[in-house]
Length: 114
Image (cartoon, rainbow, N blue to C red; front, side, top):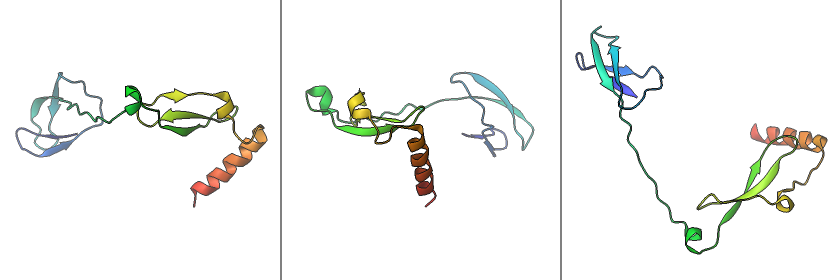
């Protein structure tokens, strides 16, 4: 957020504080030294997408890898409505032991450096 001083009209950068909406704040301009007040306004935006699966159509599932301990797992999530399917038969990974997971993690970290 950038704020403009109402006196000197110079831009003041946001000090990275969490500002609450509809609250009046007092601030001193670092440029001219005058005090002023301001309120924070948030603009709400929406993004709408079709979700045929919510209207009798089929879900469009995509595999999601969840990395965790003791071992990672895979589940499926619909790309339209975020519906998740957790099926242990589907969720299995091709490696089973912690050693296999360490080797796989090492291989993945090498790939990320490329």
